[in-house]
Image (cartoon, rainbow, N blue to C red; front, top):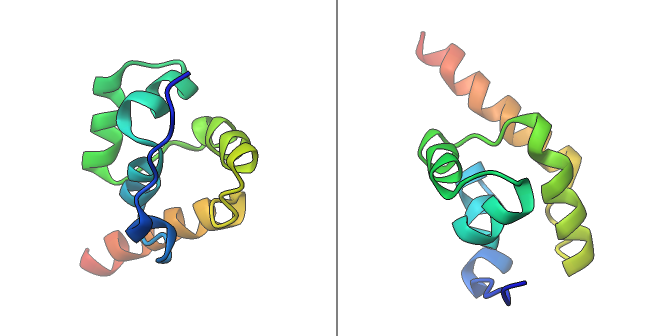
Length: 90
């Protein structure tokens, strides 16, 4: 397993997007955790979205690392914010 290098900027700020969540772990490590390829995680980052079927992998690792800001509730809030922005733009 690769060591984590979590940016202090990410740890000291609120997670404002799925992109921030991905940056917390890094593309390579998140791809390993999710059992998918790096290009798929890069697409998630570009789209600012982590599909709910991957949230369990993210939450389990966040708990293991003591990253208390990454929770199901927060991921759900990020998803709602994303869809609310999309609806407002339509």
